[in-house]
Amino acid sequence: MFTKEPTEVLDYQIDWSDWLGALTISSSSWSVPSGITKVTDDKTATSTLIRLSGGTWGEFYELSNTITAGSESETRSLLIRIQRSVGYCSPIEVRRRAQGGAGAGGSATINVLTPAELEALIEQASRMFDLECGVPERYFNPVEIPVATTKTIYGDGSNYLQLPPYLPGTLSISVPSDFTMPTYVEQNGYLVLTTEGGLVPPFHVSSFASYAWPGWWSGVAITVSAVWGWRETPMDVKAAVIEWVLNLWRESDPATVKLVNLEGQPLRESIPPRVNLVARKWRGKVGGPAFV
Image (cartoon, rainbow, N blue to C red; front, side, top):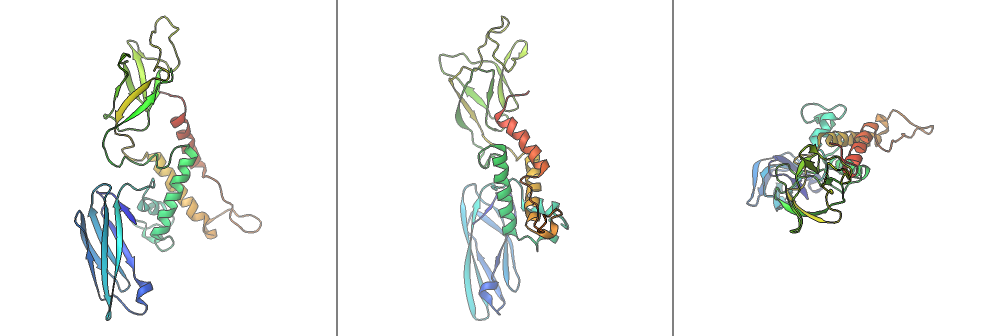
């Protein structure tokens, strides 16, 4: 199964070499269901290609490709799901950075790293980055369907209520009927209580005479409505994952590894230093105290 976003225009290729043997493709035709659009198609002696656009979020589309070779014919299918990529960067972004990349798509690297291998490395590096940050899988993926939903978040007595990622401008809150709606501002993923003098400090300050607000009530359910998720994967996350993908790729080829042990085996680092710096930043930001 392959995935694409509705706004993407992507090529999908079928390699028929294993079936053809000594034959070559003389004709190719595609059956495309409604809802997704064939932009163009092409063929070589051993492969067929189709370029697709459009599609609807969450839908699956099964396409059939029928070829003729000599007096023989055969049909194969592709299954396309319309969704966000599960990786934090795209293959073309990696190829642009790859050593020896040529042109906008890094075409010089296509023969040393197949599309399937590259997709697998991107998925691997993205999930490894999640682990380093201590966040759920796909935490940094953009929101798939921009529809507001509600979450229940409990106060902890502090003046900063931490929220999951959400699209700015889509948030609203409600509190239990026997509580008074506080005054707050949205800053850096927190709802920060305010007074006439501005932001309330992050610690509990009810003991000070100038403050009367006891923080977000400890254990009290706050209902928050928003479109949850990122508008786009943060740029530093994307850059870190691209670097980690390239690192994983080069580690797999001793010819591209500079440091080796006494037996000539490549020395592998658990995480590239710059990637670690980005992960450390997000570890503190996601689960640590608020700094505004």
